[in-house]
Length: 228
Image (cartoon, rainbow, N blue to C red; front, top):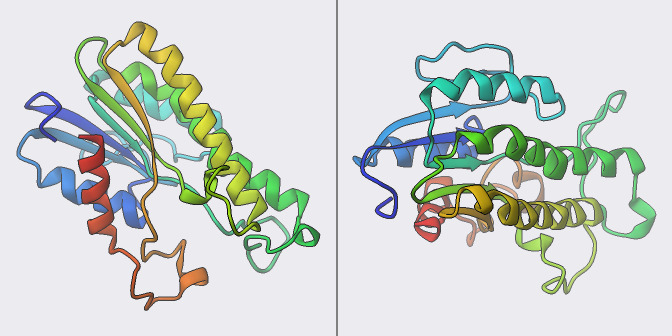
């Protein structure tokens, strides 16, 4: 990451996922990165920090506690949110609810869960973690969005909850960028389209042998290049 100062610190939220763990590997291999911390579901800060309470996107208190525990290691010039869900796991349901193919498939509980995980949770992460960015100098706060979250690019329809929750995420990130750069003028907020990546998230849709799908490490390298 040559656009960030030498010795920059990085934080990956969602480090246990396919792309999140790939981000971790890429950043650990970057000689310019002095420190990389990872947060994942059910775990506090990694790599030597006190683990603290588990991280839960649906529990704001756990997000606030995780941010507070990392405050002493701030500032982080790079914060990445690599969370999200395509299939919703609902209490009392034996199988996850997948993306809707038509209006008749809309399930209000599944749609609410999609917004909670894909939009509200990341917004809460912005709320509690953006104070860990430096006030001076370039910094990056990236989040994994999706191409299907684009309103203008929607040519196929379907996937109502996932599309709408990612579109909401894009708007949240854009709006927060306006506010955050008032106090951190060189901060950049980025909503990222990772491509179709071979991962547990996409496996139920594309299978495991999709020829055009990217390996997580390839996607992560490209995304870091875009942000740089």
